[in-house]
Length: 340
Image (tube, rainbow, N blue to C red; front, side):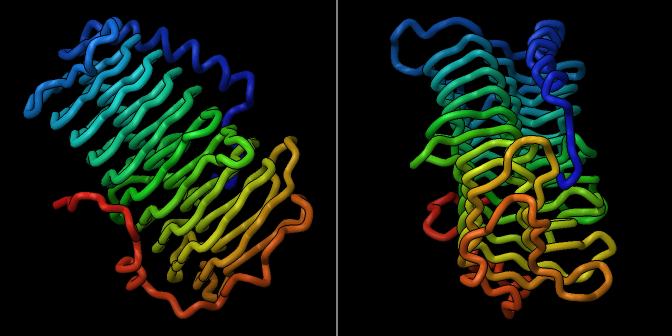
């Protein structure tokens, strides 16, 4: 979002509170897994299993290692669809998570987690990873996040750290009137490393609004470093297209960004430090933007001037002849299976 979220101390406390909350709701979940696989081959949950829960999560994986959940359906769920907590090397594949009272897939304090080829719909948010490492979100279909702020993302990383974190080849669509989504993809106080940034690449984002602070891809929300948004396609994503809100070593490269005039549209790409944390080393290059603001004027790019010199501005096309047909150019070389 373009506006601030939680103060750092409050956000840190939420990690502990979340663990307590999970313990309280675990008893209501119809499917629970815990413990170590003991070095055996990764166990796989049975394909075709469906789980619902009126009061809590549909599936909790806590203190698990080396596990694959494949081909299952979850929902409606009273709170979360799937919770992965304090676990390592978990793969969620070919699952459907729908109609959740809170987040569809919630990853907390875990390492080496993959969510792929799955569908998440009608949750407050889609996939949320907090205080985790090595998170890969790839080739998923995400639809109609209800929000509102601070929820409403297709994918959000909150304090995700290190190498090997990627959000790639996902298709997210919010249909008008189905909710109040915020940022389609958000990186909040998250850090890659030199040579291995957190990568947001080759995603297709369609639809956003009416939030006056939400939009497409948010980098550096309340800080962060070594973040990359590359080769994404955004069509009418909300108030903004791609934004840097603070942080260092951010790159926005080779994206296609289009928005028609709507009551909430503002700017295509923006660089604006909104937090006390440092902001600098920003690169914006190779992007094509056609953005119409709410007053009917083109507004492809805005720099508040408080993140230092931005590299690569002359290498962008800020009056590109783009329209909604750019959807056909999305998800290149992804190899994702087709969704209905």
